[in-house]
Image 1 (cartoon, rainbow over the protein chains, first blue to last red):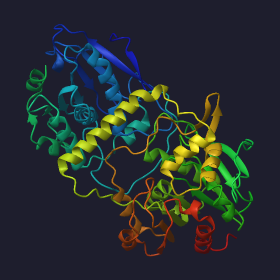
Image 2 (image 1 turned 30 degrees about the horizontal axis):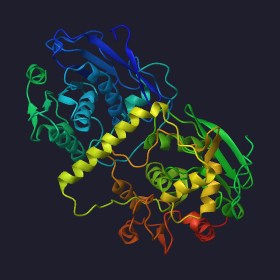
Image 3 (image 1 turned 90 degrees about the vertical axis):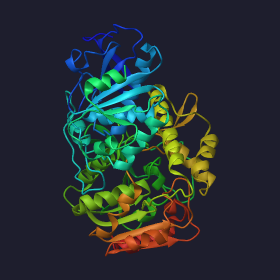
Image 4 (image 1 turned 120 degrees about the vertical axis):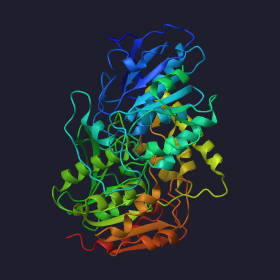
Length: 225
Length: 309
């Protein structure tokens, strides 16, 4: 796994690119998984804001993004991306000294990081939620909907991903349940950190929950090393 | 056009489609099945989740006999349609639009949907009413399932278990295959989900919704698909769309609750009928109203739609 040659993970019929941006300088530190925003991809090198992390730093390209494969005919959901992130988790825990990782998500990746922290609370030490593309998501309840079709995509990001993941539903009570799940099985009192400036409704709900820190990115990284 | 499989188990009154072909739905191959005269007025039939178009083998011929060209399709991953990389409600909706546009571009059509197919079409009729002349929803009116007497922390535990189980399943799907067996074994498995349907009908379903491999019969449905799941969508959100539907609407509900149904209590949904709508409740009938009582349901639908010509 190198920056130029990602490890390809199979998630059902999709090949996902997991990029190792940097090996651990301190083997006792758990890996950090970076999840990019909507329409984005994993950066080529460790971003300056994550430079303090001494464990493995890896980034996943979600389905239809970056070097991952493009499905035919769309069908994206946030829960699908949770499955993507879970595939990366399964790979990275093998490199962890204690079988746990921390996860940092930007924009849409922040929403998925929260879901992963709730769904795999025994393996996610901490989740950091940051500003980024797709942070707002779609409505929190039913709306009048439009349905459409697009020509097949030949390169990432897949236009279906941009549209479908840009309007995914994020009801506050659904979001809250991931916070509760994350806290229920965590060794930490506050396993989720909200570091974003922008707080759409779902994220404001997360930030208001017991067990969630509102801190700077540097503080969050230090807390979840 | 493909030929009809000749291993199909006979069942009284059931008929194979007259025509079968594929259409390209934005890169996904969707299998279409038609009963009746190719020149007759079209009527779309939409199957439920974990079903397939051939589950209309009993019902569609009755409509076709009264002058309709009944067009059903296998939703992506179901029946003879392609196993797609992704599945979602919106993707199913998009595939449905490809069928609408193929069958009679630019013209409104009468539509019958069962279970998930009924819920899909109810949402589509709300979003694009110009595509519909009539809508029949057969036991596909979603209603909030209440699980009483469960504390909030217990609900959270249930969700944790659902999600973890779903993720574990996703980790296995790349190499997963449906379990093989004899026709009788697959029919017996299906009977656990369809306890009210005759075993001979379920045996027929194996031969129309399954294929014979070296190890035995397997269901065609994509092995990555799984009953249940989790997500932000709420059944009552579809129910809320009903009162505003601006087209003639007929709901047909079975009074007997079943595992594969929505658990919709008729008295709870009757207040949501649209202005041009009504709901018929069939006593002592389960979720598969059109299979348990095909003629009775066909008569209701034919009366509602009027003369095909």
